[in-house]
Length: 210
Image 1 (cartoon, helix red, strand yellow):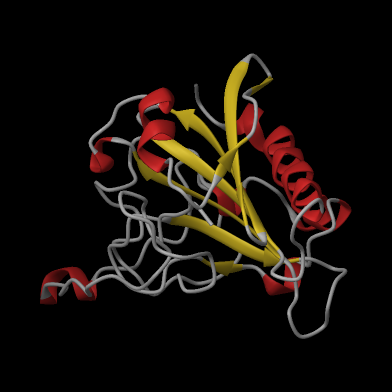
Image 2 (tube, helix red, strand yellow; image 1 turned 135 degrees about the horizontal axis):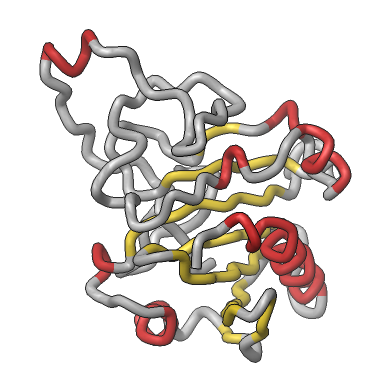
């Protein structure tokens, strides 16, 4: 799967893509360690969990004020088919590029539960400054790009790979990545994953600064 900025729970590493795999842990100074750890987005809305990472918000993901973890409330998540009780941070260590959340779906295999994640990371950290160049950067022999779509007047690009679909939209100088993953789906079934990923983009895009 082409993805992603930050944990083992999001996707495979692809060169040039912010990854959801644990990155090197950055030491925290003693003074910083004593300060309260930020738990709210820029609008003052609280995260749906307690983060233990003082650098969850960092220069690696400050290109947009959009916070995926506060974009939908309990009722909205459930109405979309997500299990709000399973929400968790995509970050597995401090100072990761990926800033966002992952949810399990309410329906699906009980053991290999399908999941949806959405997170942000700065484009500049990948050496590009626009979605077109980002798309070219993420093109590999393993993924297939769908036709670009326009949602709320903004271009959204999506790619499919075995068992996953990733949708990308620019917000400020960052990219917002929405990944729908179900390893039990392949072939034609992957299109259903893209419908779900793009559906979540439609649900949240108006909250993303252009």
